[in-house]
Length: 158
Image (cartoon, rainbow, N blue to C red; front, side, top):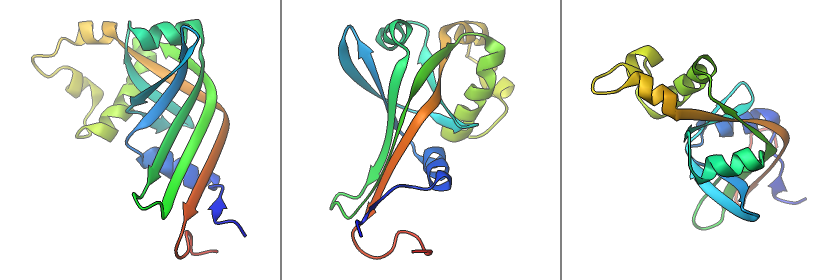
């Protein structure tokens, strides 16, 4: 029996909820381009904070097909987990659409507080920030996963 296993849907959800960094794979000017990003996993979707302009936005506007990867491993190779998500990216520009995902990112990477309180702290400029920020929302079309542990059991039910 191979020590490499697929993760269960519950394990994938837990892993994506807790992981700190993902890698967004896109095509830019015909070439592969990978960007490490912070993200929130909510309602089965990946939400990434982005600026309104730049290489990532240009690439996604010309080709919304993506591959998103999250992994974790020990340096000695005795354990790893990885999830690959294939799908399409949607760029959210509407403030009402962006706010729930911005709240999820605040909850994950900052001290959780209401979005309105967070965005209105001086010296912030809420109107300009909301104009400039985008949410890249990834809806998975296919998810694959792998996990490996060299010693012992990964789960108690094995």
